[in-house]
Image 1 (cartoon, rainbow, N blue to C red):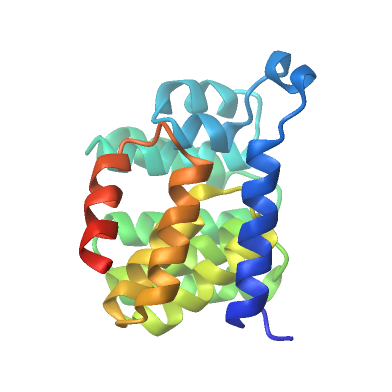
Image 2 (image 1 turned 180 degrees about the horizontal axis):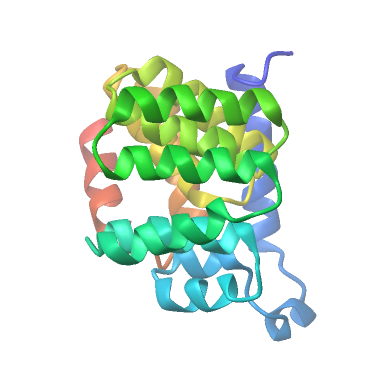
Length: 203
């Protein structure tokens, strides 16, 4: 079954929600993962994780600083990621930097190279989705975010941006499903109120 088949997407979303609602007691004592800090808007803490050489943390910290309109800090995080040993992360960093300077076409092309180099890395698809959204290619974006959600089903922002892409394509049932999943996975996300407002308009 194709990864972007609605039935397959629904199953993945349901499993992610179930996991979010059934966290073992011992997990509360565990160190919060970088993507969960990102989803809660705790971007400086994500940046601290990047100090250990964690490429996912560096990438997410860059995305957080972009949200805060702190371009210099975002570029610093992308530069840190560009020094990674993994060629795929270097491509992701390059795409992020290209998007940061407003070159969406180049960012899409570079992100496609990252996806081709490692189709199993969720954040390569996520970066492609971000770049394609900026280029207003929402069909490519929705597919990329769908693949990111399949590979990383508890990463809330794959559903958030996927939902927005589906909304732009007027694929309302899928948009609503993705946005509801986002709210379940990221109850403390800064966009919570805005997403609730969007869902009211989709009814």
